[in-house]
Length: 168
Image (tube, rainbow, N blue to C red; front, side, top):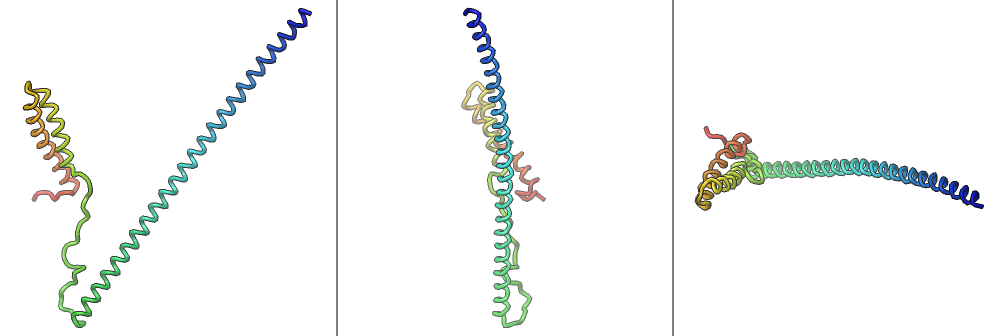
């Protein structure tokens, strides 16, 4: 009887050991399959996102082209009205739509000069406070000097980028 119990115990322990390994392998395969699905989902979403971006860009281009066409039609209409109002004779003057300088598109956001002044002022204030024994006085002087230097450097960058007309 003892031998039978020992054999049953050994065989059950062997079966349990094999069974656990099979469960671990199945779990590992399941995890790998989930990772592959996740990677595929990410790739598909990236493709879909790029298609959406392309559609948005195309719509914006179409909207801009439509706007340009409307402006051109308005210019033609105003030039034909001015021609008709002058009695059909050309006096050599240009219409209001074509005369004068075209307005240039203003750049939005902070200029490099403003950014330089702020960054230079902050850095100068910290440096001045650290250097001078009287913290307030050093911070004020350092901030003023730093803001001035940052402004000059930023103004030079603005001239290079074309935001500000260079000095002649």
